[in-house]
Amino acid sequence: MPNIFHEQKNVGDVLKYEAQTKYSRDGVVVAKGQHLLPGTVVAFDANGKVVQVQPAATDSKKTPIGIMIEEVDAIDSEVRSFVIARHAAVADTGVVYPKDATAAQINTINSALKAEGILLRTTA
Image (cartoon, rainbow, N blue to C red; front, side, top):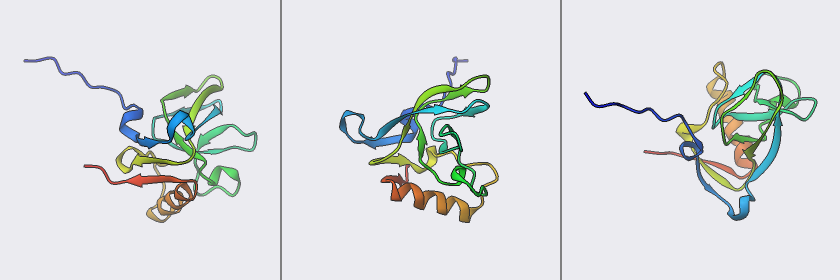
């Protein structure tokens, strides 16, 4: 039986187009306690650190600011990383929403991303 290799999800599974010279990316600091996968929709917390977007929140954590490019393990400490923040196209199948997000909340998240210039594209 042949060996089967399963590759981890990576930026190519999410990002389908970005502007030249990394214009689409912003550097961020991921808040301690987070484990974010490529494609995770993120927001800023009250301290300006990145956390997974929380659609039911009543503060800045409700407003998407971008999509994670890489897996980040910030469980024990803050970690620097990058997000897709503008002028990009991403695969709809690569976007990671909160597990408890409703269809209406996902639509709101997607509209907010579109307003930032991040377009979701249907992939085959």
